[in-house]
Length: 102
Image: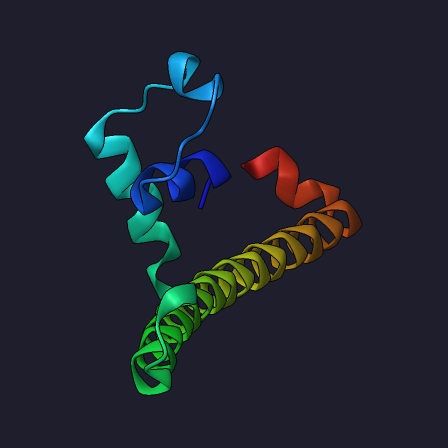
C-alpha cells in the first residue's frame, strides 16, 4: 500500500502532506484490496488464489500450444503442396511437347 494511505487508514497525522494528498475513498479501497493477499495470514486462501492464477496461465499456454501446432500443420501442408507442384513443373520441363498441348 502507499505509505500515505496506511497513515490515513491508521488515523495518524500526516503533517503538511495531509493538505496536499486527498485520495478518494475508492482509491484507498483499491489500494487496500491490492494489499489483502500480503496482509492475509490464511495460507490456504493465498495458495488457492495462486493455484487459480497458475491454472489460468496453464490454460493460456495450452491454447497457445494448440494454435502453434495447428499453424505448423498448415505450414507442412503448404510445403508439401509446393514440393508437389515443383515436381510437376520439373516433369513438364522434361517433356516440352506436353506443354504445347496444354
